[in-house]
Length: 276
Image 1 (cartoon, rainbow, N blue to C red):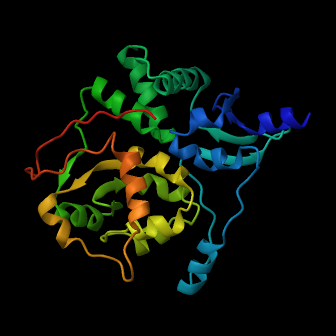
Image 2 (tube, rainbow, N blue to C red):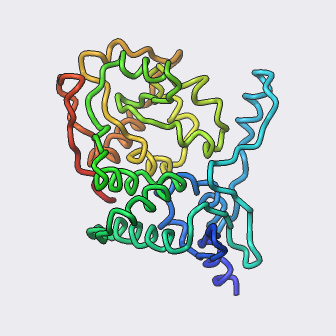
């Protein structure tokens, strides 16, 4: 019974918009950024306990704490079988195709081909679920895809953030974390307040002791700060990220980071996203 209960807690019950429920292993759902809260609540240890850092930071800033919900996703805690549960604004037929996509991606297989009508529905589902790889695939099929992964100037990063974006830089990697903010365990304000427009590898090391956080980096990755601009990136006060942390980070990200030779801003660099 204990083993069965632990196995059940590895599953997430995803309720579709037309009333169907899919029990899905949390590992398969991990690329779906909008389901992060439900994935975090699943597992043999049950829901994660807040460190209180978000509450402490909000109190220091005089900000009233607010609940965070993701667009199209509602987390419901546990269902009657002890599984984490959430509602997704995706119909059951489309979500079934999403699961086929996730399984193919996890196994390193080619995804199935769909007609344009189905691809349009999958594109909407990818947006609701925060599934970046499926969103890019759909954009490419629909003739709208332009690779976002390229060498970027530091000025481009700053100007993007000034327009309301949220690009952060970790060890020279440019990461688009705007969609992640509602799911961030520390709240949606702390990253824009502390980690934008600086080299924030030290923050990442301090606040993410678990290397499980590395698993999400390739979903946020949009390129590199160009080599000649690296010295222009402001650094945080205090010591830099440790050599041990940077070594682990570089080893984990080596299979999807692009080369950082000097390149024109407009040059698109295509990369291979390997699976670990």
